[in-house]
Amino acid sequence: MFIVLLQPYNEESEIMISKNRIKQIHSLGLKKFRDEQRLFVAEGPKVVDELLSVYSSVYVAALPEWLEAHSCDLNLLSGCTVDRVTQDELRKVSFLQHPQEVLAVFRQPDYEMPDADTLRQSLCIALDGVQDPGNVGTIIRLADWFGITRIFCSLHTADAFSPKVVQATMGALARVYIYNVDLPEWMERLPQDWPIYGTLLDGHNIYDTELQQCGLIVMGSEGKGISPQVAQMVNQRLLIPPFPEGRPTSESLNVAIATAVVCAEFRRRAVAVGNVCN
Image (cartoon, helix red, strand yellow):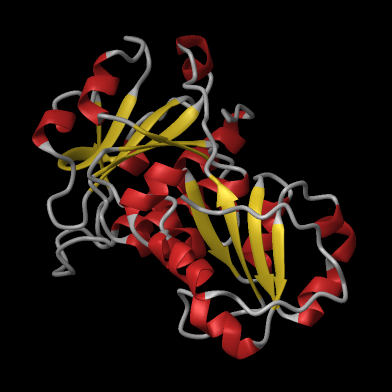
């Protein structure tokens, strides 16, 4: 259990991080403890600043310069323990090789699943077994860039609230809702008229295919692509072709890069017709 001391921020306070506190924070590197406590760790000014405006924080460890710049914000945080620390102390608790001014522990959000009508008016992403934390974090950041606010992650996809994923999002978690679902079971309940797009080797050239502006974009795992169970529910099969056609090239694209190509093409078409789904 993560211990929350009801200690408001005080500019003059300087408290060494206790061994117990370090142990608690390091435990959040494991999904088991993140799930039990419904907490996650974020680090660095960019990521922490983005998330402080959205998520509830229970703990902050920061260098004096960061605390001085944020003293007004921190005084408004109810029930948040704040430790003023040195660089060496921050390094002891950090998950990064080079800690960056601040580490914070936040409560995980509990998002309500969108209903059928909401989905019909949305462009969403589903991740089917994407296991590399850097790829998952980059895709969340891409979704934020392209105005896609919902990502549905299979049970075999890297946890969006792991330290590595959170770091790779660069704060995009503040604006993108993450849902962990049994992907095949969830897809079976989707509206029948909602297009489900997937990048597959037998797909149609994405640049020659009509794309509706609302739907679900499914991206598969790094090594195996979209699983057979999910692939059979894809009703719009897409292919990102190499250029020029027939030229010897790499076997495949990185999943995050492929996601960027697909999302960019959807948004390019949307701008052309003046119809953008959220």
